[in-house]
Length: 139
Image (cartoon, rainbow, N blue to C red; front, side, top):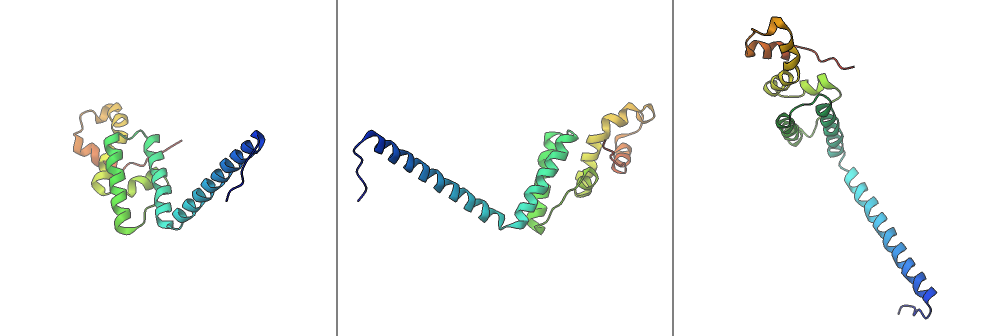
């Protein structure tokens, strides 16, 4: 048995009490979901690491097709080993497979390398090897 409301004031109070109750219930459910999600520490660490990886990829303007391949590579490694960390651009590149690292590093540095007249006549394979051994400096 609910309480009957006879006046407009009682109806308004009942309405606001109901809305407040629903809001509090939503907050409780949201906090519970966040708590349950935080129980899987490895997944949280992976999510934080991938956020850092995405930030680095945006910072150095890596092309979308490489971004996609890099994400897939890290997701595969995470599923296999349940571990992945990236702290900086050098670590980011070192965490990639050798072939993908070579492609990404070449993409990141090709424009700069091509500006140096000495390298204009150098073949692409040699430039890829050179770029793979370069160290990225960031201001």
